[in-house]
Length: 249
Image 1 (cartoon, one colour):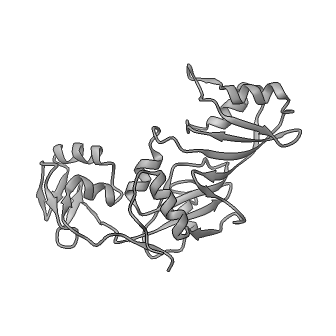
Image 2: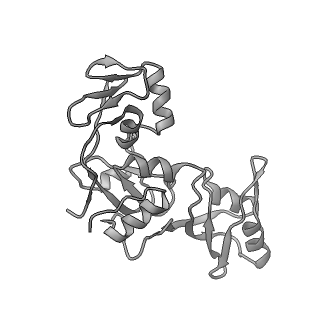
Image 3: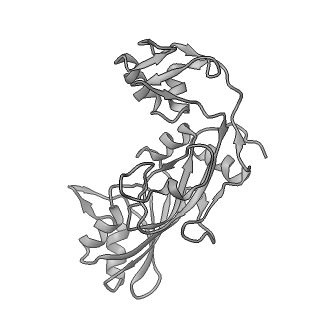
């Protein structure tokens, strides 16, 4: 299997364990520990600096086991329209239904149900929390088809920023691709941002596809297809997220 192995298990601080296990961020982990919601070997632990051995100790949050994956997996999926970006959503098909793996992975960031394109999935909690956080300044590139002509003034408004909920969106790179299509590169990810920006200039999005996330490109993947990241892609992604460990080739 094309996956990168994490460093061998060794004692680590409890909040770091929770982050590496994909439960939450380290800061959130400290709050859960302080609130008495975390147990180690069945005993409530309230000191965030507590050291645990991932191979020997059993860690649980609210009674549910937290497991540190020793085989870190990174993959990209071409999410089809109609599939929900979630691990669980009763009555709906979710992105993890499309990935046939013996271990749990979870999506990084979101693509709404009506959108398609590149979605990163991993079991590396560090990547999940760093790349999902609004402060991480990575680019996301989309191809958009709308129901209005995209004249220069429309493209300029989208590029300069649109006021949503009383706050202007950050400047974006916008290039017209035809009468009603354009490419847009964002460095933020507000809820349904592109759709709301288009509505603000009098239009409606007909198709929305993400073709790039940070240094990862969708390439020729067809809807529903997925692939593992190459070692080089993984290493660049870790560096972009501020994680500088060398991956195995």
